[in-house]
Image 1: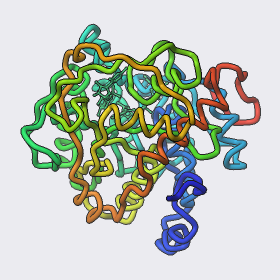
Image 2: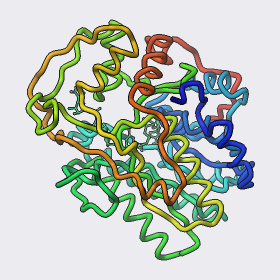
Image 3: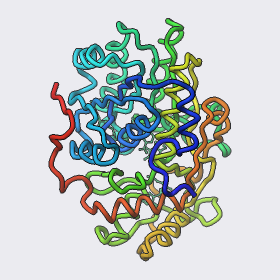
Image 4: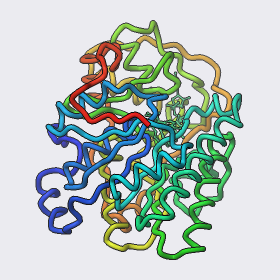
Length: 373
Ligand code: NAD
Ligand code: UFG
């Protein structure tokens, strides 16, 4: 597979993409210090774009900036502040003259959204409105939005394509659909806006260098970081939620996607919008489903460790199986995932071993340009 590749396009693809001459545009990455944003920043640089990060570090650590500098050789600009502060976002747009925006910033825990719906709507929906109001007076008209496969709920069949009915089952999922609606209304009111909606399936893994990766605070909600923490000895055992699903081995099936493939998908999306392509809504996944036991076994193979586990009842709200039909992403963006579940586990394990405490052992970088609002 493509294990040696750094995030972004592989060398041969890089030559091809450079020919497209979408170079040196500044791209604002709200939430750019987070898990997906930081990997996307690396992919953007690889592709000849200049990422400008904006983050309030409510769910990330400024130490990531130091790692990004080590990894890329560039001191990335990061503006520290809240996307809900429209004046701040306007000021960042004015100073950096960004040609496109990727809006990652937001809250993402499904269970927490059920307990704190107002906070989720304020940050996720209010955050998008604030960013759009800040961008509207500028000449920037290209925006890529982080949506989620949760908008489909429990699908009647798989694979899921973009025409499937919406069935959001949590405030988090509803907030994503509301954002999609807002963007559609904006594009209808002013056709100069070009909007790319990316519905991610299950992003996992880390950059192959082991310098950046997923750094959940507290007990991980998601499967892959939990498995990693069991393998490294931080947690005793994985609890597998349900063994009686109507799937091949009885455990839940998901479409896991390497975060570096996802990052490349953002580069492809931004390039399409910057080359005046029309807007789009596409699934980003691999098109392959893997069960919980499948992930566990792949992780054991990658790490050489046994991952202790037990079966417990189903987690409320979980669905049996979903994976994406990715043909629209391929035909629209010329993008396709290239890494498989073994690559994802290998890179997740490499990150976990090198950073058992995540970024927490490091202090904030002074080497990067970090500006406070
Ligand atoms: P993340 O929490 O690692 O990154 C989000 C970043 O946004 C963090 O750095 C956080 O500090 C920042 N942020 C949050 N609120 C902010 C605010 N008000 N102002 C400025 N910055 C703020 O999450 P991620 O996994 O990188 O997800 C990025 C986006 O992708 C989110 O919108 C999420 O809903 C979406 N998404 C994620 C997944 C997933 O499984 N990771 C799946 C589907 C969709
Ligand atoms: N699982 C376990 N034990 C755990 C954690 C998870 O058995 O400790 C199982 C779940 O039951 C499910 C599978 O592993 O079958 C994957 O669960 P995750 O929590 O990793 O992922 P989800 O599919 O539930 O949801 C994730 C994100 C959402 C996002 C969605 C689609 O958490 O925010 O993918 O993109 F919207």
